[in-house]
Image 1: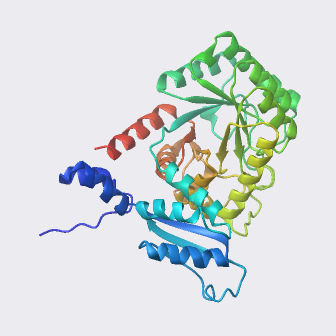
Image 2: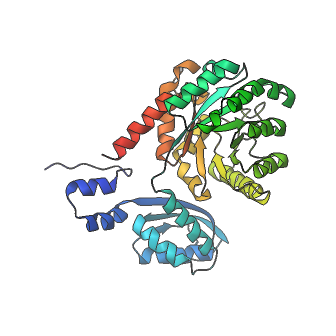
Image 3: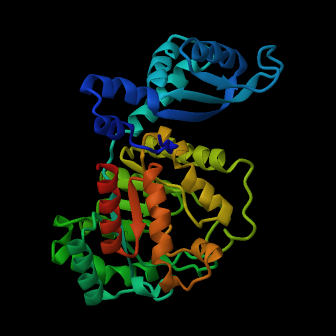
Length: 380
């Protein structure tokens, strides 16, 4: 006799099917195997007591701090432990409960929905500036168009064009200079109708640059400031563009000067939630969120965000992750920027497993291959 401990990430449905379990049994048992560990913060203590009893009544559980039963504090942090099936039942139960549990039920439902299979898109990076941190991403005019066409043939879903470096301590650039850098590429994209082959994103927070990109057939605005400027929001709304809202602590000039968070996951979540609401209020309806790897984060912060990416799934938005060739890899395994492809793939595949829908990369072909292999492994 031989036994094997299975990981929490095992594909339960495939496992049961391969065992020869009948189709009806596969669906029933799969919902009992898949477990969820959900950290709920600032829950009304009355709601916590109700949720605890409801969870226990169906075989799930809720970890609560001492004093919860006696309601010694108005709000508590709790951890819900439930199978997929239990979470489905609990979601329905809490819709009829007070103390914010109805709102919680909707968020739990979003988590359940987010676990369904999703298409992972590859966003290739092309920079029109000479000081981007990776030399291999720098292109001008005709060379940029050649690179774009190569990325398209390699399988890119989106191509992100930028003209200003956002690396730590990068110098500020005027909107005029930024537009001069990217304009030849934007005009060539429009002239060659490349926007008909792939989606284009403009990596900018300057309204003049964004407007020119939109007029060139671009559909996505990738704003590292997280739509801080209302004019950018209004532009996105007027062009019916998709907005990427990224989290950054500080600015590129100071963001790595001892970044500190009260609660990393909560701070990033609340920022993204606030900016989503702001964007919606100004008419922006199609939104992607970016946790901002390397933008005002320590190595431990970056790793925690990737490992806990599911925390952001309840925002009910696609999640973009861009760790491509960044210095966090060098902190783990000393290496030059041009030596960090393997580390990049490891980080991005982990992000993909944890909920990322878009990977922003310098190496399109390698990522398309890695994602395809990972999906194939998940389906055998």
